[in-house]
Image (cartoon, rainbow, N blue to C red; front, top):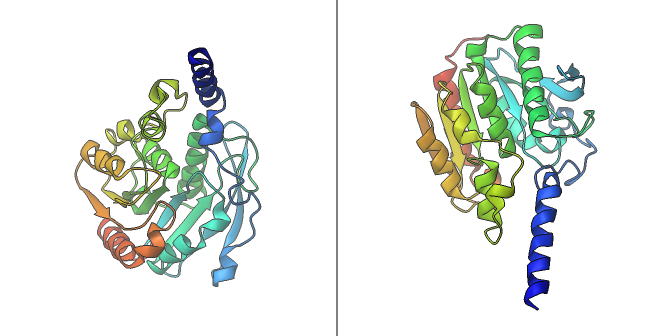
Length: 272
């Protein structure tokens, strides 16, 4: 019996190691098909296609705001696609921000297969589109990273200097999160993906807003606290309520107030 137990344990650990991409990327959850657009909430938008440095093509939307005070680059989480972010898009649009949101490679209508280095290249392509094609000034661009997108946004902010960085329900690193989710395995040692948000924040000098709920059942609140500790000033951690996927709905007023105050601080009034 002991031998069988050891074999099963080793087999599960091997499965986690070999197939861990299945635990990180969920382009089919709830669907890879983009079934909604900003037009469904009354917003005009441009459907765009971006090329990456390594040859992939990303699908996305550019949503202009009248007399915009700045632009938001939205890097979404690991599940679903841009069509599942209309609630968040509406919030930022009401704050007077242009919005660029793209699907990572392997998500939505984008080509390729997701991977850590690939998602970083996707973020660089989105930044280049805003700063070069749209001629948006970096000091009027706010980066918003949701969950996995928070790590990607922090990586990007460590290499460029946006007006501000917002991390929503994000984690310190994949190894640390894996260990918290699978404590029965040496998960941190098995992790082949890093997404080291904590390390990236060490090089970020832009103002930071962290939004996290103590009720988050997927990414523990301690990760939000860890990110605050790792970051340079100015920084702020705002507590929400609700789980990982419904905190925005349950804490909408707190969320909107915190994000609005942050945007008004880092992007002074006046059209771009």
